[in-house]
Length: 205
Ligand code: G3H
Image (tube, rainbow, N blue to C red):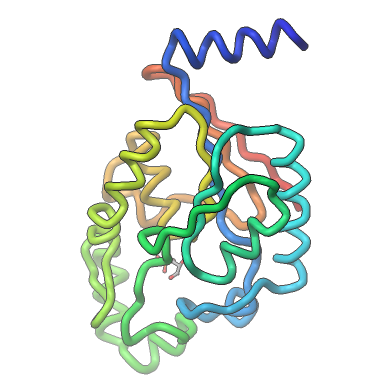
């Protein structure tokens, strides 16, 4: 184990290795209702995830602050982690404008044209009074800089946000970002060693 530990730190020092942890918030009350946006709290299952995540991360003894959005569901997901927390509004979920607090079927009923425009071009579609995935790419630039400047980092954020961050880090095409698979209750670990990326998805529930 000591040898493994030494190799790990030598890798960080010599090979410029990065160790990145990304997770969505635990299931929220709005997730249960299929509603998007808003600022709801965690569901019972989401609260269980926050405990499992706390245990898992505390055992790793990472030396990094935890970055969350300013929304209750990410802050509470990090609640049991014994590390400093930094809340950043740029990690908040995509702003769905007039579609906030609605379910996808309500959006389809109320704003059928908007719904189909988004279906056709999800990357560029900007919610009325809200944002597009393209906007998120710009909004998240400072986070990519933080990742560049840190060897170890843990981010608790939201589906659209993590699609963009993960897409950038793993060199996906921009057009793929809006449909990347970022599941709930799964911690994504990326070990980036120059061009080589080792990905681990740890399902905690
Ligand atoms: O709006 C909230 C969702 O996390 C983003 O999902 O871009 O697939 O609609 P979507």
